[in-house]
Length: 138
Image 1 (cartoon, rainbow, N blue to C red):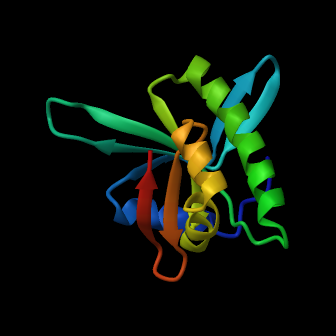
Image 2 (image 1 turned 120 degrees about the horizontal axis):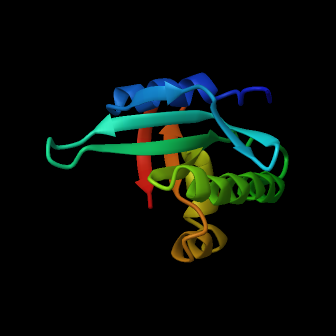
């Protein structure tokens, strides 16, 4: 099992504060004999007639010297997990959780906007200081 990101517990707490129940820590996926581990699985009860919403969350800190390196690595994992989730748990929606500074520096800039417009990634922004979700980008 891979090591946890430095913000793993921060995102877990932020999701709880946002009304989510953590169901998996980590969420194990298996495809063709290969094991993969998405950082978190969570669910939230919606209005009585709508059931529940399920998500998977991959946490990334974006703390290396290169935002582009972090983005390329994160997107590779995201695409892999997304494609396996579609096959195994098609109702579960995958998100990439990143600190609010990464939302600003990457996903509110032209390259990040392009990824979001092309539906390449869904993003959760969080504030690591107060452990809250600051933005959901679908």
